[in-house]
Image (tube, rainbow, N blue to C red; front, side, top):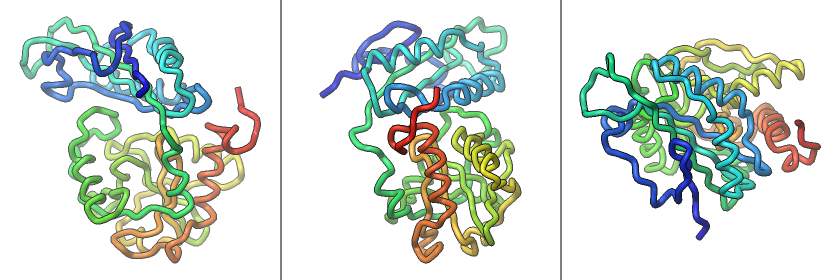
Length: 289
């Protein structure tokens, strides 16, 4: 089995040997943010977008903005010799004796980075067949635009999906779609592509952002507007985007077929555009610098 190396505050050690103090505020309070990046051909995809979002999350929480993360991230990918995989970055406020307030505490962030390979592309079969989803009450906190490690409601929702043979949970708040437990959601109706607008209820996904830009460049604009739950079932297509899954058609929601249970043309185009950009070798085109 390949040894996975972690970088913790710039020190490199095997991940399964890494020791982090339980006094870290991430352990007590979930006082940390994170990013997950896909690695293709040994390079992280959409790196600038991910670093921009990480900086925004740190700023929202008043955690010191960190220097050198990009260099440490690239070094960790190289250390682990990962060609196809993912790199995880987590930055906590730091460690101190357990107390709720961090006011006037001089804390130094703790930064964890590790890279692991994929044994197989995680979404090729799902792209061909589509995925099943359920709808689930959105029970998350009120600042979902911050990519914090407070993911228990997401885990509960996705576990509920898995219990009934589905792969994703589409979250519903006050009868409106917010996002998936691990993804952003798009629908297509009468050849119009729509997605919920960014707000404090939605994570600004990097694949979401890239896809909206790419579709616009190809003359197809995405309308960002609130989407009510019934619109999911009336849609011609539903698809999701995420860092790990790229873009996938949702063929069934709450056991009801969407588009006859097949991938639609816009879901296919969305996937093709994302894969062509982040993994040109996989899409059969020359890699962009």
